[in-house]
Image: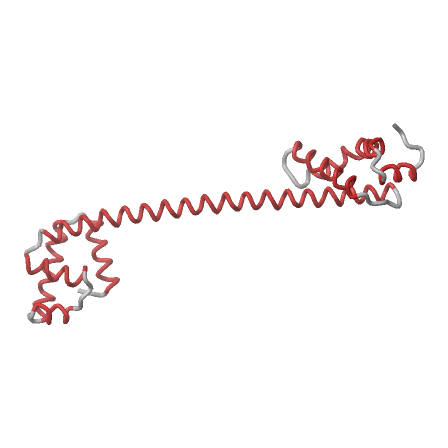
Length: 195
């Protein structure tokens, strides 16, 4: 149906007359869809935004001074819907990105723990192959965290003997360990500053 009077159209629209809503919808839908496409990438989503903009405007029960005023309100309602869709989409993307990042961190952490466990197992096995005195000094130093002086006092030996036994033990460990495991041991030594 065609309206001859703008005033009549606006009154019918305000009163929720379906023919007035259909008239406004048919007249502006294509341009509102085009405007809505600036918020999304797919035309189906743009149509959904445009339709929601129309529904919001119709349900608002606002009165309009002119058809231009109604059209401006329609653009504004569509803009709000489009911005809300963009925000919701960005939140979803952020949640997915956060989830993926967390999974990658968990995977790296898991891998780190695996490497650590295997390296430590190899290190413990190699320590068990050391002569008894060297093994005891290595355990007291690197595994229990005692200083050279504390070890010397505990074993009632000279501090220089502790240092010599540690150097001898490190040389033997180098023969029993893979290169990366030995380097890991050295990094622990450097980290704790104990030689």
